[in-house]
Image 1 (cartoon, rainbow, N blue to C red):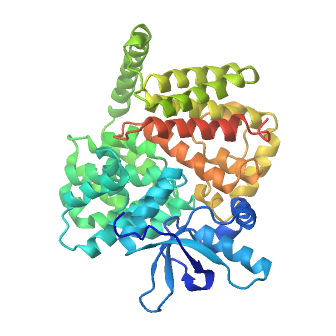
Image 2 (cartoon, rainbow, N blue to C red):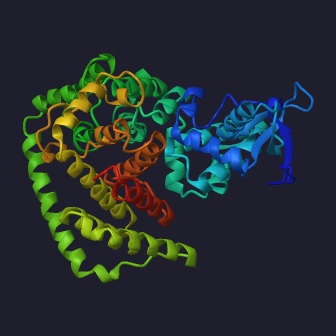
Image 3 (cartoon, helix red, strand yellow):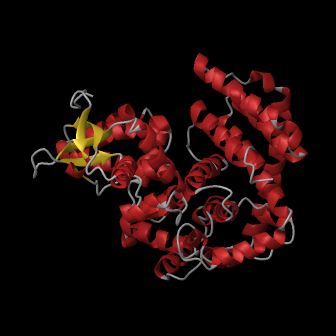
Length: 479
C-alpha cells in the first residue's frame, strides 16, 4: 500500500493509545478474560510479537501514535512488560498515513487469517466506508462498491449483503458480535420484511421510515416477538403476497409495527382468519414442493457426473485432500447418521455444490453434539435452566426461548442450534473464541439453507469443514 511506511519501526508501549473503534467490538474485560488471550500473552513472552501492529501518528503529540489494528497484541505485550518489571517495552509497528489506509490493511490481515466473523467484518467495512467518504466526500455509491470489491475481493451478492448490514448502527452490530442477536436476522429483516413492505405497501413504509423500521424489528428480535428468520421467509411471506385483502393486510401490519409486544405469529394468525383457505392451499403447495424435491433428488443421483469439479490451485487441492483424509480417519468412530451426512457433504464439496456442502457438514457436526447430550439429558436440562437465568452474553441472546425439559435426542432435532452451542461453551467443551468460529459456520449454514443470494468460495467452506472437524469430531471433551 503506497501510503504505508514499509519499514517496521519499534515504538514504546506507552506512546501508543488504544483505538476506540476496535472492529471486533470487544471490550477490555472480554479480551483479558478470553483463554485465547492468555495463550497470546504466553506466546509474546517467549517469542515476541510476530506480526507488527498498525498505527497512525497522533496529530496532538509528537512521536506518539494511535492504534489502528492489534488491540489484543498491544494488551498482551503490555501485560508481559508489566510482569517483567522492565518499564516500557517496545513493539514492532507499521505506520499508516491515515485511518482509511490503516483499516484497509488491517481488514486484509484479518480476513487473510480468517479470524473475523461476519459481524466483525461488517463493522470493519462500515468504518472503512466512513473513512473513504471523509477523505473524498464526492464518492458515489458506484465508486464505493468498486473500491469495496477491490478491498475485499467479494462477489456482487456478498457486497450487496454487506451494504444491507452496514445500515444498522454500531450498537446493533456489537450485539451481533457478542451473540445477543443472530446475524441472519439483520439480513432477513431487510430481505423478507422491509423490502416487501416497501414494494407492496409504500404508504405504510413511508409512515414509519426505513431507519425506524429497523429499530422496531430489532426490538422485536430482542424480545422474541419476531421468532426466527425461517418463519419470515417460509411463512410470513404469504402475508405480503396476499393481493386480495390488501387493505386488511395493511391494517394488520400497521398494528404489528405499532404494538411493541405484538408477536409476528399472532399477526400471521390474524391474517389466516381473513383468508381461511390460505392454510389448505399452502399445505397443498407444500406437498407439491416435496414431490418436486424427491423427483429432483432422484434426477440428481442419475446426473451426478454432470457437476463440475472446483477449479483449485495445487495448494487448495492439497487442503481439500486433507479435509477428506481427516474425516475418513474418524469414520469408524461415528454413527451411521454422521457418516452419511459427512459422505454427502464431502461429495458436494468436491463437486462444487458449496451451499449443500455447508448444510451437510453442519448437520453432521450437530448430530455429534446431540448424540453427546442424549447420554445425559438430565445434565443438559440442569445446565439449560442455569443458562436461562444468566443475564450476560451470550446466554441472554435466547431470552426465554430455552428448551428446559427435553427427554430424548429427538427433542433437539429442530434446527435451532444456538442452545446447543451455548451448552458446549457453558460446559467448557469449547472456548469463547471457538464459539465464534462455530457461530460463523452456523450463520453460513442458515444462509445456505434458505433462498438467499449468498455466494461462497471453496476456501470459506473448507475452513468450515476444518473448524467442525476440530471442534466437534476431534474434540476429546465431546464423546
